[in-house]
Length: 311
Image (cartoon, rainbow, N blue to C red; front, side, top):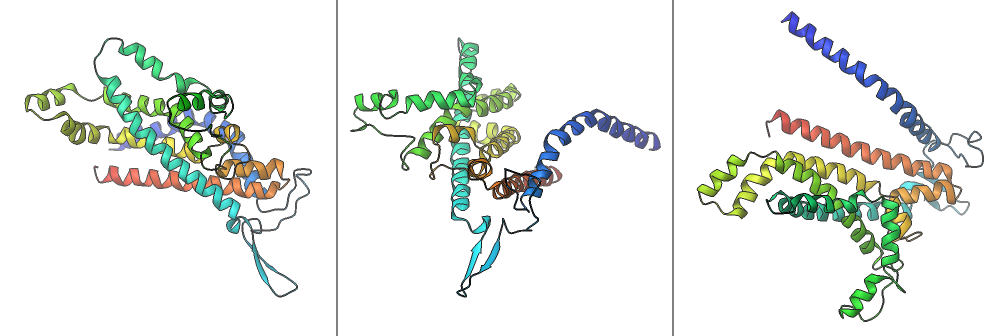
């Protein structure tokens, strides 16, 4: 027992030794800027002079103002309609995009997992949208969705699906739809790749037994495949969900200054650098970090509970 305990301590020390360089770099690159951002959110710092800010506590988040007329006004990020609109846009984008990408990724992964000629070429071709940088994808789709010379409108007009050209990224009714189309097109291969990796690890004997017993393919997929790949599927959904909640570049390039698509990251960036409200933007960035941190801790806790219960 003592030898086993000594071995465990040695393994823990070795693990910390290997992790130390990464933790040092992470603290320097991410930790210090994060702490500075949190500090700025409790001050009235301006971008013109980052060292001249005064400590104002939670005023950037919530404050009560008494007017000379006797009225009481509430100010701060938590009562800002623009902030809550950005939160709603971000959550709506994350839920719809991740749901569509998971369903489509599952379909693509099941197709690519089958045996057919040219499967290797198709697998490589499917990954092309994901391999294209996001900025390049956004600019490419921006041209395709243009209301004057975009190919999307020309195709829809020729098919008779629309009567007039649509300003996809400029109209409030279609801007979020355009962003979702581009994001789903780009990120579905990522989900398909993770799900395909899980499918490749499943034992073929299970499917042979199901085929011999005459079980329908739909029932095999629902009762066998889905439960076995659920851990990998949940990891893919969690990673994609956290990434979707901090969406910035795609929305910023496709639909600049559009209140119908403005995300939390875009809202924070505008206040940080464009509106000269550096402390207010720092508060928005801090709340975004808090949301992501809480979601991550919840997912880790949920995974630990399921592991303890042998789920």
